[in-house]
Length: 212
Length: 212
Image 1: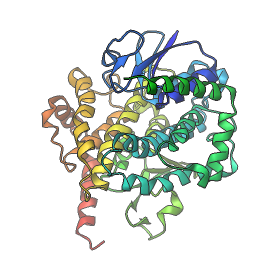
Image 2: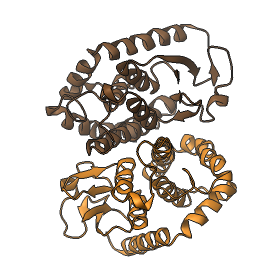
Image 3: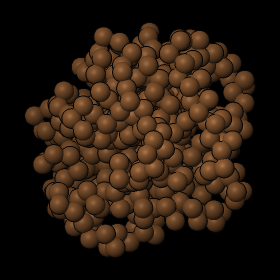
Image 4: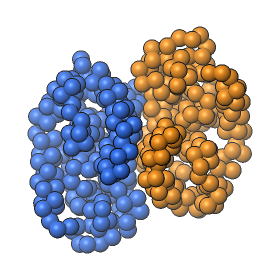
């Protein structure tokens, strides 16, 4: 059985969405990304992955795969009949990789990451100034499309759905891009997406209320 | 013929290295990432790609592909006999994607990008504090390996080679990670890598000396 180390509402949510869309049985482990402890048993998360970051997908052979772009493609390929990624050889596979990179680098690493990580030092003027231009890319693309790639839900949509959800706590109102807010609403109407988010929101609330 | 829009010594250098390692004939266009002009003919680079960023690979069918992780995998798959990526279906393909994501997000977007982009505002304390931990990941991995993935040069090595080259102008001396400096030396000893770097360094010097 696959195992996923996750932190509620962190970028590993995209992997959970993909796993639930694929209907895969998975053992989920909550890894605390600040304390670097695995919550199940208090063990050292750095022993699972020296990066100390989520997602970490433990494969059937015990190997550990990190980085959303790789983990999401792996999940999609475990269950090709779920159609979560264009097949290898389909030109759209590169479009999937293009969007995974864009969400991971431009929205997550260039904006969400400094926003949540540097929030105490007032050095966010440049990331904030740039995010509207960044978001105009998927907004334009989605103006006449239901999904990011092709005409069905893929792991790129799982990735973007997570990023859009985090924009609100990061202080960005996506209502200014009607195509993005309509897209997020469509994605959240999917049962697997809704359930994945509800599960992690509930866990996150428990954690916020705890002394740790 | 494939076409690559590049800016000398920007991350598109990784794509040039991959194209030259593959021995592909390519039409290169210098796109100025500050002025957003294509230097060949003064045309608007935003007309080529609204992102205004390099690399942009123009495919044989005229479509334009962006994002290094996607462009590099496309190049590798155009010429599979060059062995620049494990074949689809090989588990190492996900390791390639993992490294492409790590270099693109953690070294490029979380460190090099703010270093060169925010250099005037003194807000780099956190990216700088974090980069040693980031670089310890490939340093540890390469302590007993010649290449990032498997036992041959892949596009992940092209990507990391570019990132390591940029660390020096970003003020990071990689000599503190002997496995990284030895790796960079090995990579730079490859004829295609050496030629790609020499070509772009020469172009960059011309530009720096020009009034623009």
